[in-house]
Length: 363
Image 1: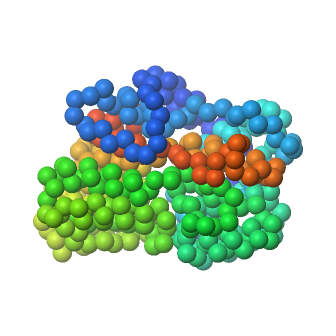
Image 2: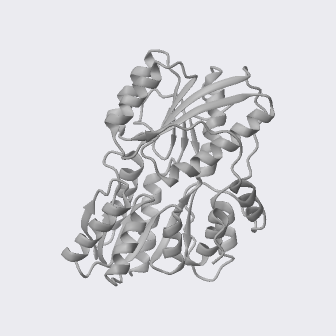
C-alpha cells in the first residue's frame, strides 16, 4: 500500500523552524560531513544552524509556463521523505506567489521494492507528467528503466539520497552525492571513540539502495584500515526499525562483546538503540539522520553521533530544478547535473538544539 499526496500551502511548522534557525549562530555552509569532535568548541549552535537550511528563495529563473504537474516516487513511506516534502511544499508556495501553479504526486510503497518502483514509473510514464522524479530503490534494476523512459522522450530526474547508476540517461540529480564519505566519516568517528580496536556490526538498510550500500562500503573500507578492528556482522534491515531491533538483538546474542554498530539509514539507529538499551550493552552506535527518537538517544548518550542530511534543501531544490527541466533546460548554467546537499555530523552536545529546531522539543 502506498500513498498519493498533492501538497499545497505551507505547513505551520516551517515558520517556527525558521524562527528557531535564525536564532542560531550562523556559520559557513559546506559540502560533505562535518566531523568536528564533541570536545570544547563553539559547538552545538554552529553545527545545528548549518545542518538544515530553511531559508530558501526561488532564484531569478522565469518559468515558461504558468502551471506544471510532476510525479515523484521514492523508496518507502517514511518520515525522512516527509522532511523532503516540506522543502518541496515551500518551493510550491513560492511559485504560487509568482502566479505559477505546481502540482505533484508524491508516492511510495510501505516497503522498499525495486519491482514496485518500476511499476509506478511505467504507470507514470503514460500519464502525461511534465517531469518524473525518482529516488532510486535499486540502481541495477531501476537505471535501465530510466534509460528506456528517457529514450522515449520522458523527462526524468533523480532526487533525495539515491542517484541512478553512473552513465544513466536521467537528466539531473538533486541530493546527497557523498554517501560513501558519510559512511566513512561516521565509521572514523566510531573507530576513534573505540581507540581503533573492537568488534563492530553494520546495519545497511535496503538491498541495492545506492545510498545505503555506499555508506556500508565506506564503513567497511574504513574498518579495513585498522588491524584491530573487525566486522562481525553485516545485515540488511530494509529500513525497518523493528527489523533493525531484531537484528541487533541477534547480533548481540552471537557477539555479546560487541563494541560498536554502524547504522546506514534513518531507521536502524532507532532499532539498534532500543536493543542496546534493552540488553544494557556498552556498544557504541553511529548512524544517519534526524529521527526524533534517535535524537533523544543521542541526547542521552546511547547514540554517539548522527549524520544529518538537509532534507528540506533537497526538496526545495528538487522542485525548482524540475520546473527548469520541464521547460526543456539541460544541466549547465541554470543547474548542475548533480546538486549536492550537505550532511552534518552531530554529537550529544547538539541533540537538544536539533530536537528544538526540528520538532519543537524543549524537554
